[in-house]
Amino acid sequence: MLIIAGHITVDPEDREDYLRGCADIVEQARKAEGCLDFSLSADLVDPERIDIYERWESDAHLATFRAEGVFEDQASRIHSASVYKYRVSGVEAP
Image (cartoon, rainbow, N blue to C red; front, top):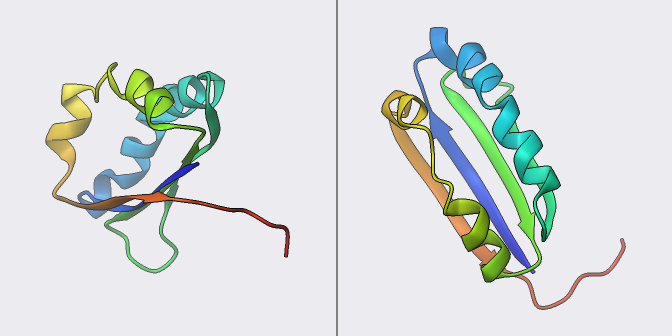
């Protein structure tokens, strides 16, 4: 399993509009084969920050989804990104 986690930053006055514009992407991801979870959300304390959390069954599933790319309008609105891929070797309930 893979976890993609981190954050991006956008103009504070643009954040809510940016997130609304991502609704279709979130819906598509959640329906994609191999997607276990996909979420973009406004950070509670930093008005520029959008938190990212994704879980995928495999690299192949992630690559298939990512091949669709980011819409150019969205990419141009991102000021910085700190997003990493984590490989999970085991999972257990708390």
